[in-house]
Image (cartoon, rainbow, N blue to C red; front, side, top):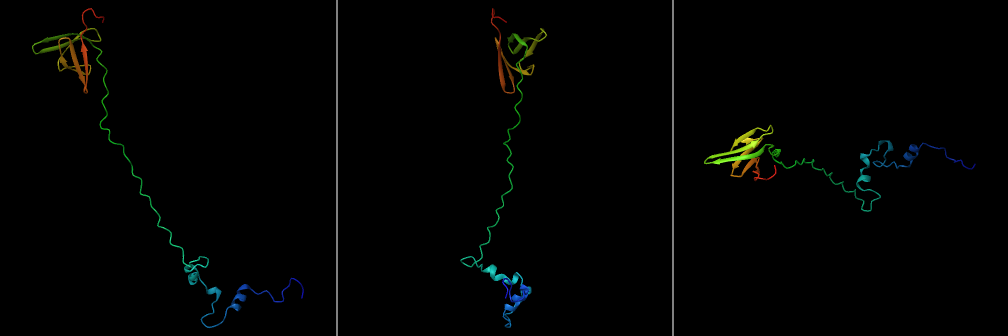
Amino acid sequence: MSRGRHPLPVLPVMALLAAMVPTAPGWAVSIETLTLDGLSATRDRPLFVPSRRPPPPPPPAVVAPPPVAVLPADPGPPAPEPVAPPTAVLTGVIVGGETRIAVFRGDDGKPLTVRQGEEIQGWTVAEVQARSITLEQNGETLELALKTPGEAQ
């Protein structure tokens, strides 16, 4: 016998396995007829797990709730733009009985007379007193006083 040679001819693996399987009735199984469904015992009782029980099913997937849009709190209507103080200069007041008038020098140098309750350059003349007036606009108040004699203009 020569080295490296086997005395038996090489048979196909399937034929060799078929020859090794006993031929008792009900026990003989052809490898070609085996299916994965027929081998469920290896799935149900895993060989390399000490308990021989299948692993527990994976936990259910956690589905995150959809994001909720957070809207900023309603700031309400925008605050009105403050109007600059009138450019007209208070030059006098007329107070007598029910008459209350403020006298201004306009931008063009001409005198302007405004009664209490009327407007000048976006401001309402709210009150006329002996030496001052009170203007109102959007809840803001502005008091203008007459200059005393001898005060620089």
